[in-house]
Image (cartoon, rainbow, N blue to C red; front, side):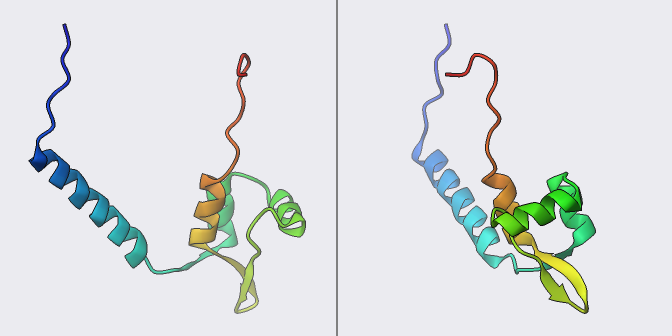
Length: 92
C-alpha cells in the first residue's frame, strides 16, 4: 500500500523560497532583442507564416534595429506559451 509523504513546515518553507527565487529570476531577467533567425528557430515556422501572423495581429511585431528586423525575446516566449494545445482524437 502506498502512503503519501507527510509535508512538514520545512517543506512548505522550501517551496515558498523556490517560488520566490523563480519570480525574482523572471523579474530580474532583462529584456533583450533576438534576431529573426533565432525567433524562427524558437517558433518553428517560416518567415512568410510569421509575417502573415504579424499582419493579422496574432504574433508580436518586429522592431527595427540598425535596419534589421529584431524581436523582443519575452514577447516571443509569451506567444509560444500561450499557443493553442492541439486536440487529440477522442477529446471532448
